[in-house]
Image (cartoon, rainbow, N blue to C red; front, side):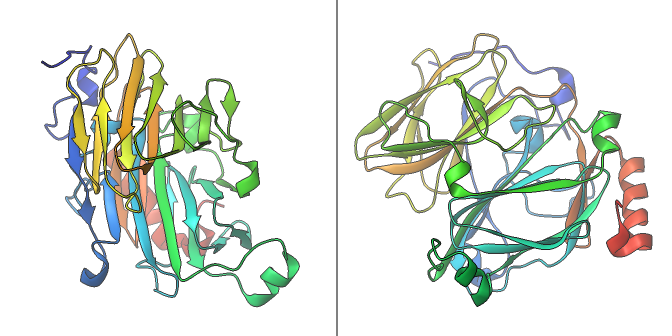
Length: 338
């Protein structure tokens, strides 16, 4: 049996990708140096307008208002496969699970660090150049004696979403960034989990300090014990995705609203449930225990497009805008977006 839902509007179809009518499970893709391809995973978000980048079957048109998600778990001293790079349009969230990270952007200079368990968010607006990934120097730990030094592993989830890219007020705004400490991400008590947090957005009255701008979305971080089962409530009109982190013992099973068509979601896979007018309860079960990220959001009527260049991603409403922004960055360098 399959449960049909109200399909997304035609504008949600991008590059011939039909909107989802039922829950689908997609595999993730490795990227970066071959030795790290199992530890650097593209979970959702696909290639750009020119076919460049890492392909994911969970493309932007299927996961709107989300744009991209990567998971990385690598040795802390491994150089990351990017340096200073530009963005427009998107809101990028770096959710640190292990390890700490210093930050830099062309508006604020050096700042941070973002601590393990915390979040770094940057709204690229009309343009920003930023960098992240350097471990804190010794004096940062001396100034923060309550923080433990990072271990040998950096584990992070990078999650991008659409803040309302087709709005002039969003595209014309100056970039802004915020570092949110672990203790400021609110806990979520949800039956069946041993730990829960509202990382971004608001869920059932629990609100994260991480902004969502014009997007209606939330992201939950849930830890399920062996045999744990949680029921997550999607609001009417929201799509939903469920992703077991690579540190989980095993994958999970997901049942969409209505109770039909349970699907196994193995490690390195993501379940994507289409938006429906009714919303409803999404059941997540972990036979062996798991840490899962769950995202919910109302799709935008229009899906933005992406252009990759200079190790960064430019998002905008059309190709002419993207090409103009690329040329602007190439002319202005670190003054981009100021």
